[in-house]
Image (cartoon, rainbow, N blue to C red; front, side):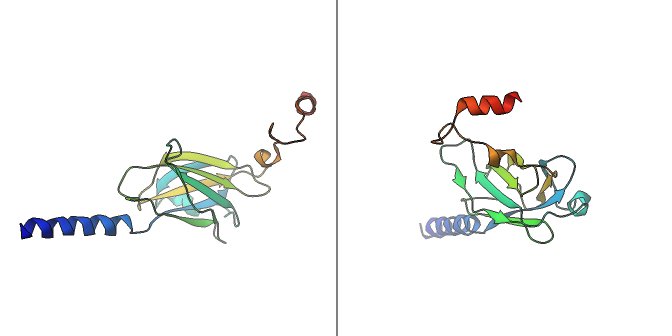
Length: 157
């Protein structure tokens, strides 16, 4: 009986340590011709090819299609375009989760991607194309001064 109790305690401790290990999703944002998000091997040469985008905002969500989705803390890219997103969900890194990422920077078209939560051997490669972030300029039908006719006229010309 004592052996079973000891074994159970070891299993519980291992699960708690593994769940709190502080998994991070790492990546880099570079300038390119088209905006996109791609998962690559951590040694992929494209991660260091191109001009880095400093100051890009990276927002992410775990299990975006689930009712139990988790919005993660937003991060900003550093001078080398690199970012690291802490994922505190239980079992992150060894349980299967889906992840959604949106990357924005003024004067660049945004990039968005959905993929299985990458392990420590993978990186998120984000490429932003110079251009306009049209999402930030859109008006919602829920805005008080929204006018369908004004939008229709704007897009007709």
